[in-house]
Length: 200
Image (cartoon, rainbow, N blue to C red):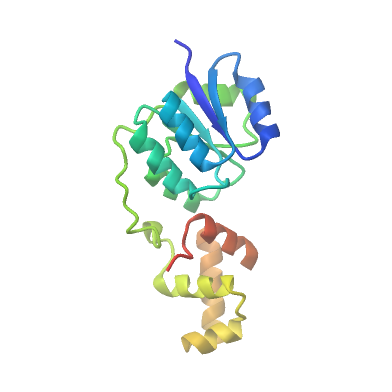
């Protein structure tokens, strides 16, 4: 029996390209440009695979995955994204993602991934208690620092507000970059936004 697939990406041209590549071997039963539509299509069609982008309008990706896994346990969620950082991958795996692929994946490898993808044995619990500290990635102090960085505070302002030295702020910032795989303040903020780490 032909495997069924829902494509979820906010770029129509990318969806069309992926569909053209895979519809010879798989039955594409729906396309979504946001998380809520992806959830609705999965409920309606219960596909074998949901190909899901990370950055789309709608609920956070982690929440979308958990909802899909609860409402359609037979659906394997495959993340198809440009992002490769390990922090994000761990977070989404814990939410219920079955596999990951970079958007530079070859046509053959993508077909093989779809053909082999299987849903997790159990639906992950809807546990948001650790959303602010996935796998202990950032300490509480590092979370304070990155939240202030996101508000455009300088190192001096952060040191004053947290009653620590500027050198300590820089050390925390270096650790944050290393843990998130970030290359700049803007990059670090983007990554913690995707992981919902800015929630208080």
